[in-house]
Amino acid sequence: MVQRFAEAVGREGCGSTGSRLLRGHRDGFTAVERRFAAFKRTERSIYFSSGYLANIAVLATLPEKGDVIFSDESNHASLIDGIRLSRAQRAVFQHNDVDDLVRLLSESKNVPVNQRFVVVESLFSMDGDYAPLADYVSVCQNFDAVLFVDEAHAVGVYGDDGSGLIHSAGIDDDVLLSVNTAGKALGVAGAFVAGPAWLIDYLEQRARPFVFSTASPPAVAAALEASLDVIAGEPERRKRLLARVRFLRARLKQAGLPLPTDISQIIPIIVGDNTAAVKLAQALQQRGFDVRAIRPPSVPDTTARLRVSVNASLSEDDLDRFVDALGQCLRKLGR
Image (cartoon, rainbow, N blue to C red):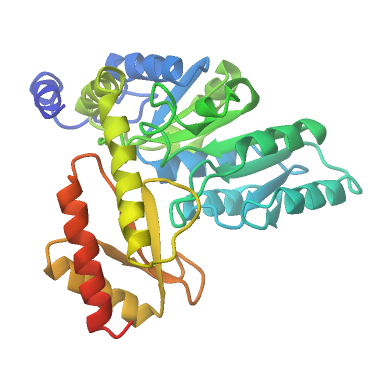
């Protein structure tokens, strides 16, 4: 990936010099957008320079006055900010609570509504839990709503081909669009919005973060191609990652730590107190473990935590040492 990026810099230079609609466009972006659309089983995709901009672009552009957006209370800040920029009304339902979503959708039938949007993440970034996507599809069909899914933490990890939880849930044809960050499992930068051609065409012409942003460096497209090659050609990486997740969860359970029921690569270790979470993270960093403390407003009050993110390069010995160090640090802090 690094070599292909460097070779592209040699051919194309470092900067794009303008927006994609002007001189910033390169054929490499068109090619990787087509490839990513096929990867996600959609008609088209469009690349943004960050996941934050992608979510802002979609939610500030598509929903209009007279529409209602139904948003999970644990959605990422970029989704929340995009909804705030929208002219649509908004309603927030309790985290992963299908019944609460149904309640709000039912109430919306009592007032004139043009279009209903349901906005969720497939894998939530702070709790590491999965959204009940298949249930949301059924609810959306019952209420004539459309489903928008942020796959930031799922793409590259889940599904038989790594395309994410939408595919593994068998609902490719039931999701209006998805946002897929390229800076996490894909290991590059930016994000793809994938969906029907008419919608991507509309975003390309109307989404202000796309129209008025300088395009990403052309070499990024080459790195994205290389990343998709790895996902397609090395499925053992995903298998190894999920095996490491199961191993670490088992070891943490042995250590008596409360864990969420969902088995994902994001494992929150709830500390509660902000200061204690920071001290615990610092103690682990001093022992060579890059673990960060997450505090409000990123998470609710009194739920400060360590956010442990597992990657495929870690060995079982690494994870054993981490659990031992975590136990020592907790005891030293009197917890």
